[in-house]
Amino acid sequence: MSVAENIGRIRRELGEGSLPKLVAVSKTFQAPAILEAYRAGQRDFGENYVQEAIAKIRELKSTCPDIVWHFIGPLQSNKTRIVAEHFDWVQSVDRLKIAQRLSEQRPEGMPDLNLLIEVNVDASPTKSGVTPEALPEVMKAVAALSRVRLRGLMAIPDPAPEIELAAKFARLHALFLEAQSQGFDIDTLSMGMSADYRIAIQEGATMVRIGSAIFGARDYSSKGKEGR
Image (cartoon, rainbow, N blue to C red; front, side):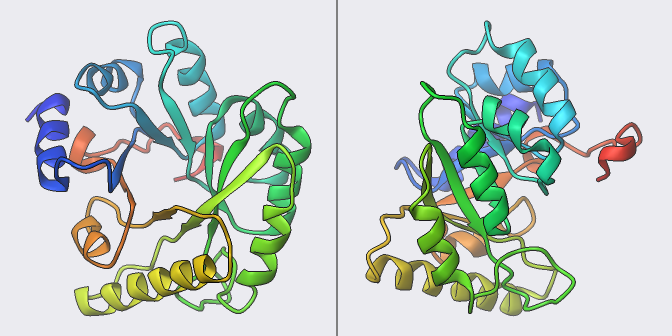
């Protein structure tokens, strides 16, 4: 199936409403593939690698001026400025320092940069993300920053059987609802990718990040230092 056909199939599966929002993860794919998805009506695109993403953003700026760009990969402190200058969303805020740098470096005159806090739902000491225990304090600090807007939570659980994945997604949904009940003005719960988005939707996702089910298999051979 073509990119446009895949977009249509997934949109039918997601339903006619505005939620869950579909973010097409276009990492490793070049501008023509993004343009095909754009012409099929897709507007939100997710990128993981800073250098690759910036090149595509600049290439497509005049042709597709209303694309909404989401940065969804690990973000190093030395790359926050260029991300703050070019993206509309950063979904992978895994520590307060990153949010603070994005706040400081978001250019004046641009709309507030939308932020999601990445939560470590696996309770793994080797995995990035804010722990559930530290989440309220981090959310409070991020919500107070200027030039950015805290929109919600994101997670990338480790692969697991469906019942375990469902439990992890349910845990994140519970944290999301708890934060709302505490007065945080958040509306976005980003969880679920090509292999597990159906489970994530059942557990309350308002945004899903789908790549290979839209664009096909990826070729990582040229990623080099930016990794996979």
